[in-house]
Length: 477
Image 1 (cartoon, rainbow, N blue to C red):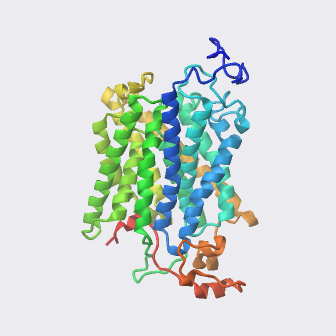
Image 2: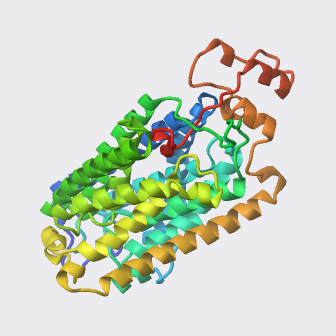
Image 3: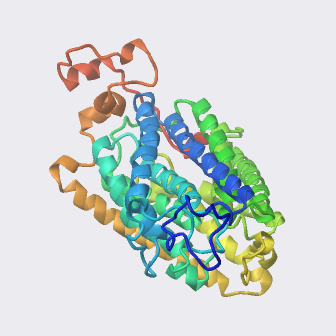
């Protein structure tokens, strides 16, 4: 067997014949290991989101949010195999959407381009994790009131018509944002802005939850398990090193530099949100506030991690923490029930990080991988980079919100795809109404068989009055 492909010969022209040529010979095994390990780290973020969302929910809905995270893994894995990867990174792409030449991962083995750092199959694995975490984040917008069957249909369609086009624009060399010169290292647009504004549309179309009202006339939402919130944040923070570090595409200083930026921005975001809440919310050092701030810092540094000098990760974490903290109040102004604050943390945080990337990006940081060349941002006197960032951010937000809203409105007109639980089912809880299993094995949670009616069940499951929201890191006065 020949050790390597003959000069100028591609994997496609040989049919990917590993019996004749050693397809591994052209690749650095250290690069392959780093990207594979980074992909595995991103995977652990998905149950991390499930734990975070579950902890922020009420007990009677807690399992449904864990279920949603694992469902996203299963469903998006299939969608990515079926046509997601091809629509995003397929050969023969237009400026707007990939082709179907790699449908069902046909010819995804080595790589058609000799300069690629890792084989297509490794890259496909890594990018598939980004698709999964994006879908998992987005479906949090309809927490505690969405029917799970239609949620699965919606997620498959949303990944196809929202995520794949935006990811293609941003990361495919033929994409219009890529050729424009917009910078997005690890997914501020495709992952965070698209999921955050998509979640807002999901919450808007579904409508508000039916909840008990306090004496002041405002529903109270508090996490039922701060322990789960902390554990989910730990998983997210840990996995984010692969999320950002692996986005260098190889095992170079740039990827490891991105990890340092990631950790520092998260730490500064956590401290900032906690201090802001201390003065806004009754002089308490809130645990949920610290976790929310850490996630805000992670979101803010995502588009910038491989572009900005390490000392700029501090203002990115601080600024994103402050902006996202105040953005939580927008749902009250807009009268939209985004119980997990996906919009405030991910859409607003991603937008903030993208803008700051235009200000702080440095050419020498990008070149730490040995090949990337950029003009930099304002610190390199490349002032129009900010315009490119704003163009990318606004187009991403508009596409995701408009297309998501149209998709949801059409689905809601189809009887068997109605988005929302009935009022009785919602009062009973998603776990009992849709799953039949419970997170907590408490005696009052058991449902006797045969089930006589929703009303009879409801009398046995005590309704809870406290629920979700990152804004409830402490009660706002």
